[in-house]
Amino acid sequence: MRLAINATFASERHNGITTFVDGIVRCLGSHGHELFVYSSAERYAKFEGVTLRRTPIGLVFDGSAANNFRRFAWTQATLPAKLKRDKVDLFFSPVEGLLRSPVPQVVAVHDLIPLFYPAECPRLHHYYKRVLPYILKGSARTVAPSQHTKSDLIARYSLPSDKVSVVYYGLRSELFDTGADSRPACLQADRYFLFVGTFAPRKNLETVVRAFAKIHKDVPEKLVVVAYPDERQATICELARSLEVLDQMAFCSGLSDAELAYLYRHSTGLILLSEYEGFGYPPLEAMATKTPAIVSDSTSLAEVVGNAGITGSCRDFDAAAAAMRRLSLEKLYRELLGKTGEARARQFTWSNSAKQLSDALVAACL
Image 1 (cartoon, rainbow, N blue to C red):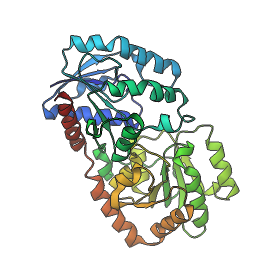
Image 2 (cartoon, rainbow, N blue to C red):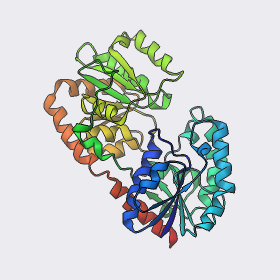
Image 3 (spheres, helix red, strand yellow):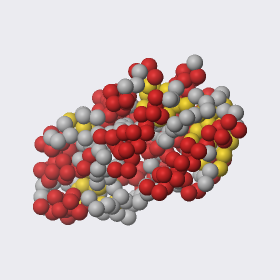
């Protein structure tokens, strides 16, 4: 199959969608597909079985409204002609599909955050509400990263269940390699609990801080928060100050993959109590390093960790505190969860993801 992949948004900055595209592109060639990747990222030219079709550097995602509009306009007006030129059989778009595709189209929807949380993604809210329904209606198949997101897509966009395929994300193999780690300068503690995410209210860092405040005098751990700084960080700091734990916390950002892997591997436990996630990489990445994960049971996080993690209500900081205390004080329990978690994480390979996506692509052509 001659397959075109839209990666116009891809940059060198690490994020979930770029990781997804990189992992998928690396593996799809082994399933017998001829790949055309539309992107300005030169790394794709080095991937086996890939023909890179270079696109303007100005289309790379930077979060601005002008950038989003420019990329959307180019995708709708210019990309269809390029697909015809390359005589592709199928077009796969991890983001921003075509309103009118000249070939059968498969679109990935990674989550419905812009639809459910308009304040977090105000510019994308209108796209998800008014444009995305038309794109999905005209697509041969939709891809979701979890059963949870698949259910949301079916409920919100009235999609037929048999036209939505679940393709779980894979993990970076280096997470299983202890030799790749590098201790970040922001880490001053030997024992700590870890939060990896953003300061968005949906991530529910407030409950994590409240849970930590209940136990910080009983355990040796600090709390390390990995998140890019924004205006909402001040609210979290004020809460931590009022609970007298701000001096027991450290904030890190801009970490390399090796530095993040170190934080995962040496943490007592990762805690992520999000209200909503489409998939949820951090718990799975932590589990890959034999670090237990405490997650909320109200979203895809519980689906991802399965019975290899600790789950509870996203607002129950008493239960979260109890789980953190047990991980800190019971070494055998912590080690058992670590081994179970690693076994679970090893099921999430890019080879499996590519096989799931390949099956969905073939089904789209039937």
